[in-house]
Image (cartoon, rainbow, N blue to C red; front, side, top):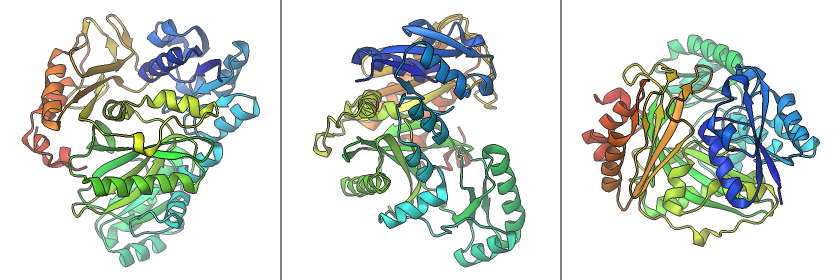
Length: 445
């Protein structure tokens, strides 16, 4: 069993991992930049090590410093959380070469699923449906135009590496393809160091539905149902819920089986998420696989009762899954709102000192956060400062509970997205479940 974990992350996910480790009897080491010395994860870990200055490249992305922190504290494992180095195959290899357990999938898993072209090829062989498009990189604007013509516009040009909307261009006419192709390659090169792109049919107004999977090193793979992550802005998720309100039990089973098949196709071990686009006809298509724990994992925990972080740690330690597929039951409805330190109208970052802080409470309310009164939200990192999660018997009750909890949530001294989330919770289309990835573009809040 693992005895001490270095947490190569910060904020609420670092705190979430510390709590899981404590309940498993595992010691923890917090790494931090010099400006993060007062962070809550640093205060609550058993040990802490400063690994560099504020810039992520010099601290949380500094592989040598993180490995050194593990060596000097006699740790035997590293948990990368999400973001930063969580999907870096080279880092996973370095950990293993140094005799450290990487709490996540293998480097091979990351490479197979991290490159979207390779992932499309792999899941197609496993019988998972994909949108019409290329299974190889597109090498010229002329080829891109020809393929777009064959598929039929609209199409989307996507970077084979990375995500978050970078290196992604939607094209509605053949004449626009060359410029969009060049722009996508340029963004992909700048953002991920890899200019390769591919083309697929653009699915208009789909739901973004993802399946949580868990796998061990003994070939056991199960899924924990789905999450609807359709409320997005610029391809960044803002609100997630489980289960998806339009899925039938038959469709849930079919999508879950496909997610399990995709994981088995690469001998996956650890937790992960297989993401799909679901169209208005109930047809679904593989989009990508995230080879890490997701920001929105709490909604799945709330409806299944499974501690996903604990299971991830135990799987990395070589233990068999403690659940079978028959053990997984979806109970009630959960919603998560990502609370960002941002202007709720412009969505621009608003770092600064929190001068007054009160979290909501009551039955079925959970707050995952690492901030506190007088905490200084730093400008160097992601603006998400909390995740507010609620659980209730029905979706309608969950929406009401979320609105009540948002009203109770007090964060003074900085602007946050709480007012935005309250508008969504009171929007007629959202309440009626009339949502898709274009929701914020077509609805006036």
